[in-house]
Length: 194
Image (cartoon, rainbow, N blue to C red):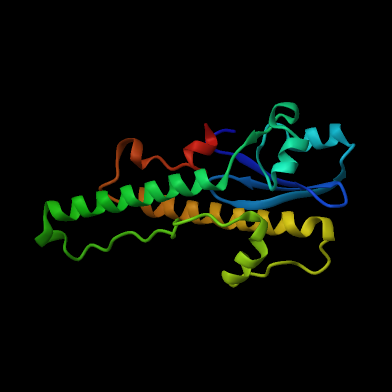
């Protein structure tokens, strides 16, 4: 992964023993679902080709043990790390805003603080459909194969969070008081990119 492009695969071994994979492509200017596959568990070569060199989120421990990171060449990431870094960055930016405003409160009292997404706690991706509904988003698309429903819902939810990360990065880095390393915009949290 580079600072200009990343790819995240969300995958699951379903009850029919098929592997469902949905991929999100991320650049500085867009976050899109870029592919989906339903493969037989025995299609090891094809699964490796899709997962290798990507960041990946296996939806269950069973999925992760059936398709281990070392064998399939992906880098496992988790939503909890994403939320932790996003929450820290938002808090740090708000602190920097308040420090800047308080340096000259008379002159800067009308400054509007940046608004950030609520990164309080990551949802369970196995409950993505319910979470999408709570956000007012469709939780499934008609015509989606049953094997893809859970993975596609999880991928759409992760895509939503990555988009919110991009919004927060723009709100944070565009401020006059943000400079140096803090002003660098990343397409994903550093924890995921390292």
